[in-house]
Image (cartoon, rainbow, N blue to C red; front, top):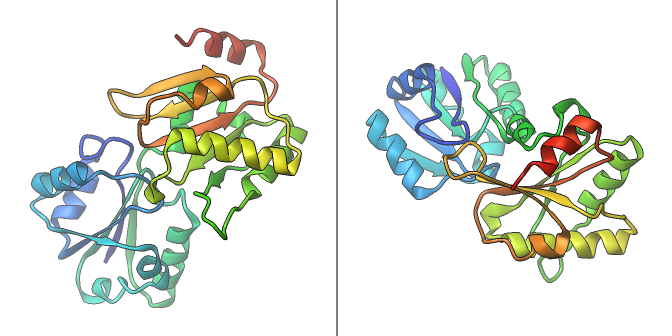
Length: 242
């Protein structure tokens, strides 16, 4: 049996009773931490709570399906930040499991895709989500700028996930956003929404200008929302943010 377990936004506190039981009943437990942000302290806390040793797997191993043989005759568990099916990588893993006739169970949890509703922006008004990848010398993708353009045309908000597992800090993400939008001719609104550590006790939401956003204290994980035209209730809620 393969268990695909969502860690939620504040593990281990956000783990459900069903998830904890599945982890404790597994013979081997894996963790992928590239589609989300899991600290070493959180990993150790899960191990203490469940009594299981957790093996961290990289993207290539998960996408190749190399963990599936462990689930053929035993119980194997893959821990995923947020909800396990928020990323297509894990849906593909389930497809491979079906092909190999491996039974699986998905245990869902909260995700950034719904937690952003705390900002006051209505979820049904969000368009395509994209990721701001950390720019390298010969790799400077601007595809997220096209997501903003497409969403703006439909008057939809854009959720941009920061590539935090590569070490990107908020100031760097803002500068990358500014450069990419300038290169692609994308107009940004006067104010952006910056969400940090949503789901945790010390979560913060800022509604501020791009320049002011660059000065924010580095608090991982974080995301950026490029708002479309606000309706009355959204404006009221965002303006109430201190």
